[in-house]
Amino acid sequence: MGIVKIDDTLHEELRKASAVMVRSINAQAEYWIKIGMLAEANPHRSYTDIISEQLKRADVNMGKLIDG
Image 1 (cartoon, rainbow, N blue to C red):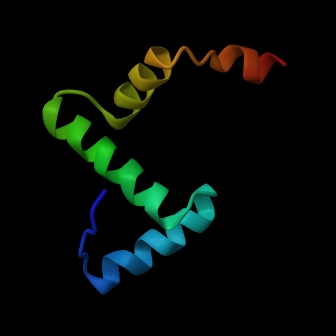
Image 2: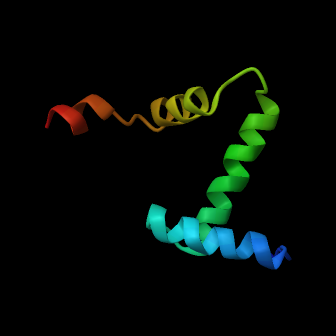
């Protein structure tokens, strides 16, 4: 584990986003980093496609959550 130095403005946006997404600031930063890496590795795929693929890989069945 290491320390990442980021701009104060970005840190403030992380803080606000983490409150909305109910994540710690570190978890929000990790999420953005992971999604950013996946987006760079797959520039032809949309954010929705990337998230859907990650949910499938984690064996998350959204239908069960929605249908009850």
